[in-house]
Length: 339
Image 1 (cartoon, helix red, strand yellow):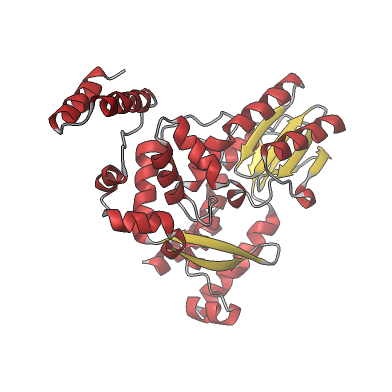
Image 2: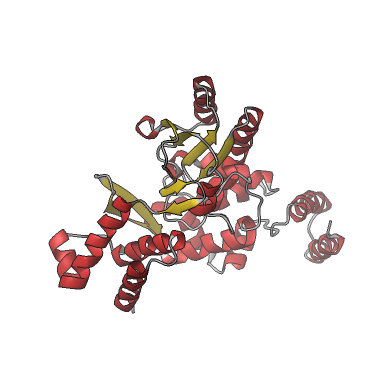
């Protein structure tokens, strides 16, 4: 407990003439926040100074959040369109402040591999390399399924007042749920999922089964996975408040190779599936042959982050297959376009 910090605030309250009953109330608040290693925030004016945004703009971000986002669609790899919602620069700066100062160092369950330092799609897949049977579950509409009230409750448990918890949660949400484009969404999804990660991991351990989660992709593996185990896990997930994408639910026995969160695995060897590389190679070939502008025009691509999306896919392949010379060349091509 940082007694110096509490004393500093108490002296400040006395200097500004705050009533004794308010000082006691604020001291309790400060004690809880310091214990949870998060910044002390009392009121909207205080938050305004911390994030460097004036109060009227901050109120607009909280109560007219939709005005601070832009929405666009990108094609899904399996057909259809995916809606991406990204915050404007000013709101993004506030969200980055919340991420860096409040959320960044909070403990995420050991089973979560998405959006966690020193964990990745690769670590998520390698844990299952010795297994014979695999159960894969997919959560439908992952970020939008995490509602505002869950986020309010999370900030409240950290020690913030109900009002400040509401403000912080609103600044992190779009249409009263998490959205894919906010920098706070990945870490918040892991933090509010912690209780369910704990339940699923405990149940898996009891049955000698391995459990991992990469964002909305859940994997169980072991020597044997009974149907009753699958059904109970689905019950736990639904009971928590999520929906399962039944089309992506798979219970399969090892047949030499298995794909775990986009990575093909056999024994201790891992690589990216040929189909994924083939589709990406085709796009990059057309850019190389006809030029980016011509390719975008022919394909009627509207995604403003299209090139960055391709670079992300290339980097993903290279993270799994660092010696792939063809994709090293494609990375140089995309970097030259971005410059």
